[in-house]
Image 1 (cartoon, rainbow, N blue to C red):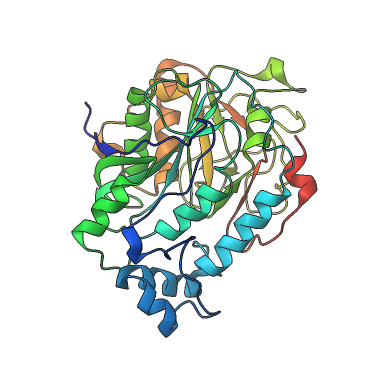
Image 2: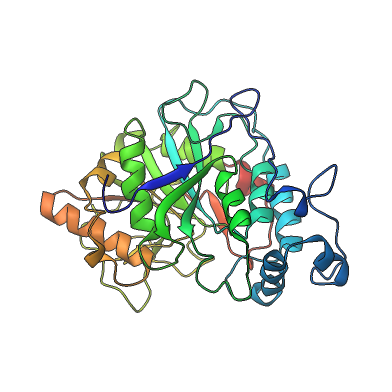
Length: 358
């Protein structure tokens, strides 16, 4: 194993092997006796909520109220209904996914986010062709989801979160968890650790990606566009970096991008004017951390195991490592803007046309 290792994992398939089911998290302390989490008042920090949830979870939900407009995950009372509306807007959830794609998608999470994981399980994970991660490919599965978590700690900015060792262990035992041999963190090596370990664990994958909890991916749209169905198939190349190219004031420019072409739905995005990213044809510095995906051959060229490389925000670090690998091995990287997800608490819109425009 490299500098980072998978220390434990839980893999549980739904009855069909293709669709995911809800799972118990932290035992009955977090769940009602029959269905889902306890119903709360409009104020998720009220007395009723506090009596139903452990202290750490209450603190997490309370901080969510403050974070709703600050670029962090919105409170669960906002997050749940919004994710459900977006899921309902997708009209082709039972159709097969293109067999040419085998995507390992790591959803970054922290132990105290059990309620958020349950929302994800009953929304975008609940569709044909999406499974928990497996050691080997499974017929009918094209997207394999891993809840990526550190072996200890509650993460940066956890504030008043105070989970017991048993609650931490319960989180690690949830279905689909992929536990890394790192302390939970935001900018100290979790992303490189994930890509390094995923490369070793899933040699049969075509792509490996990471996604944030506050990103809603339209999986069918994403995978169809990754496969190049209907457009731009000839432009697919071996070394692909899929995401939303970002160009903030900090970080060095990405030097190894192939010449960009104006191919609709592949290299240009309707989101270009909605969020602050690099415009088509302009240089970019890294892929925005909300969601990005690397082709497996590209993942294999990168040195993920050197902790000396982990200085700076992790999205920038990953881009820098990819750029360095491309320069060392003398290849260019195809940057693809597939415009197949919505990110952030400020993006409260639900657009059925956007969701189903493959």
